[in-house]
Length: 130
Image (cartoon, rainbow, N blue to C red; front, side):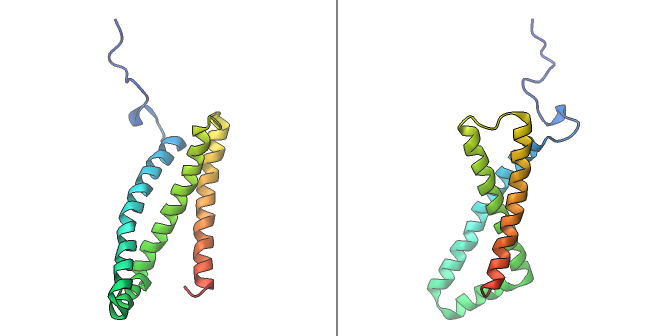
């Protein structure tokens, strides 16, 4: 008879410390949700663009406030993290990078690349009139 007290697969309560693969999977899902919600802001911007200069100026004022810029920064960071981690998953779908050292290396590469891309995007936005 099988031991029914053990979990069928490792879960969060099995590990003493959260593994990078689990953390990155959770963050990938969370950033996907934030990107979906952020698209509502893109739709709001497009509606304002079509509504005329007065409402468009109002929306730009909201987006330019400190809270608006914080939300836009979070949206940008989520976008680049989700993109980089999605590329990592494409390599996994091709059957590459499953060795433990490669998993950790690609995980840290995703984190660093998403941070660098976020900063570069904001530097470029401010440099070109943002």
